[in-house]
Image 1: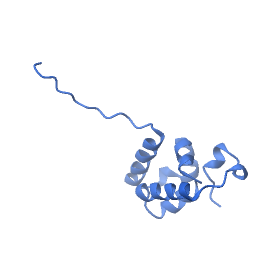
Image 2: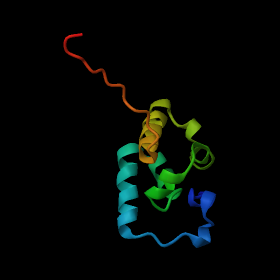
Image 3: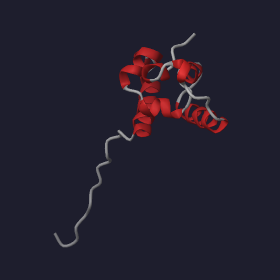
Image 4: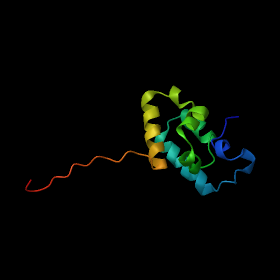
Length: 100
């Protein structure tokens, strides 16, 4: 069996039963950000999207071996994961000031 990200924080026998909405939300997010066959691995590693939102990057390596993914696939996933966590770097915006 694949290790689950929930086992990092919560023993697997205490993980609450996920609702269909939570499973659908996870599936939709993974479909958008992870291609097969890695999507199957990523889906098996989490019960819901919250598992990804609360995990650390080291957990991704331990569970998904993310360092072995093709570089662009890894970058796409990590950008999405950081955005999910709220860790994305703020975009730099140039503001023009009239008359200066």
